[in-house]
Length: 430
Image (cartoon, rainbow, N blue to C red; front, side, top):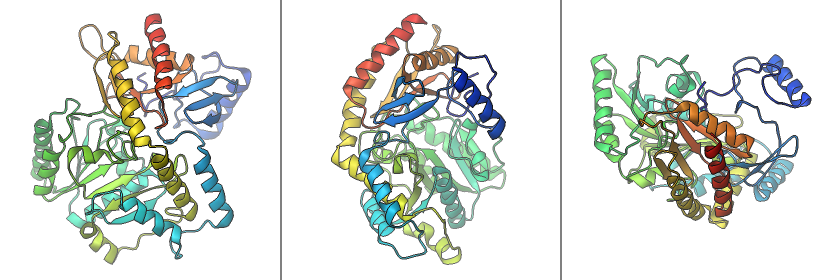
């Protein structure tokens, strides 16, 4: 079984892992009450009870270095974010159909971080909802249906987005209006643009017009396409020339992850038509949304009402605003650039591993066989062995052979040292 974001431990067989009686009982209860569709990380599931900054604590008291969870983007249970949520929850929690200052204040603050063409913010509870809403608006604007995604993309779990998220597994079938293309892990922008054009042509041959190019701007689930900056621009130009729009999914790379500003798309010198946001936006509180160019949403807004009971609620806005406070006050974008560079250099020095692709604290490392082909089995062993030594990462890529390292933005050089010590021990043991 390949260990990726979408395919983890699917079911638990009692006695199959060295778990405590309490954890085994909890797993049995989980399977009975939650059914077969949920996944768990790692061959030996991890029962966590507390988080603090870059650390997670197991039920048995074991301390784990979290080098994976970008949901807690500014560190688990950051005091400033926790206080902001509690303070607002004690005062008012209501939705956007009332006139409240919190959602307006945050909208203005968020928009100020983006290119001037992106002027309207809309809010949801999850990245899936944000991408779904972005596509609804794009379909309305273009009067077209065709969508192009990368071949191992993940964009969400709504009915529409399932067909646009091939990383969810072999049971997911693309719709007739979806085209998948190879992610440009080598940074070849000309080839990527040519593949986009080929997908547009194929859609046209089947009577389908292009609506949107929807991509995670660093191709996280495909295995991270980081360099060279600027390689996305030719593909964006191709889509717009054909009448489609560019939707930049910043759910994973956004909010400073890549170390070159808050937004990964800025590395490529392009302004998206729509930017979607999620996971790190509220540091664990469910808040997400999109920012859009006004002319794209004008007709949609004139004919379709948008409302989301929890999207943009006052507590969500307090959480999101507090996250921006922390990013700014702790200079976490700069930290991502500095520490990410040290991290990538250290990983590149391990001869037993393959190429490293990185931008800030979004890092991917290929695990290859001696003949240069993917080695998903060894990748699986590394991930699980690290877990057993107190370090948490995951894997990505279409074959599951790429180490996926994506820690909280508060990760420091001392944490890199600890990570490298444990990784070297794991590699030597394997």
